[in-house]
Image (tube, rainbow, N blue to C red; front, top):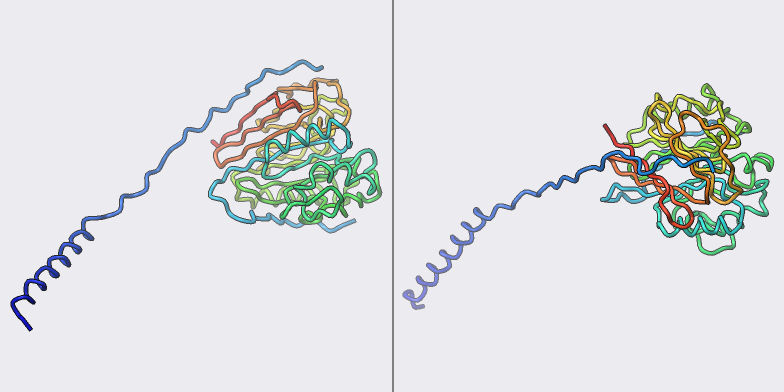
Length: 331
């Protein structure tokens, strides 16, 4: 072998190794850059318009099926909707235009008497693609449940609310239950006097709620049910539901029963009445001092956007017009 030709080749190889080692020492990755986004200021965009037997529920706290890198949740709120008429269809079209993550209801899902022979036409016809498992006749259901109703008085008009309980597959005892989606821990209550576990603030159901709120680790706790503790509408306030929600850890209360839209503030806690989902619209009767905004000119629904720092509540009429907006921020 020619030794003269071998040594230059070794010298070049060594130089290449030395250069590669130096490069590895000087190419240190840059740290990730944190971007801060300013949170919106709490506001009210509108001024008020003139009046124109089962065991105790268990805390289920169902997690999200697949954790999302985006903690924002968008959900629709509909109430007193199960009429099977054009107004309900219009509101359902509005809700679908938002493509919300889930839909919750504040009761009276199936007029007039909560019967089995009307429930699919009054619910599944419009929201089957949010329901799992869906066994009705109006098309394919969802691949996971995205429809979380509460019982209204009309749902109880059939003995034991059996058609409702048979139709849905919900957490806990299905009459009242909790679940988690994104930054929100939801607590669905049964505010009807037929509830076997009681409806006053010392009831078995109320104890369940108090305990659930106490152990919740979510940024937001939202409680929703049918009969409103405060309302300026025809039915008025349901005083048996005046539980100490704020003291127990809730940040918002969503209700229906009166066929109006109203936003109230009680000791700093926002209360909403959202009962214009499809049945006859009511007048405002006795305007409460806690009332901040009222609307009964048309049907509509609420869209709520929740992120870790804030909650934004919006009410739209069925024409898609923004009627009311309200924001709550973490301190």
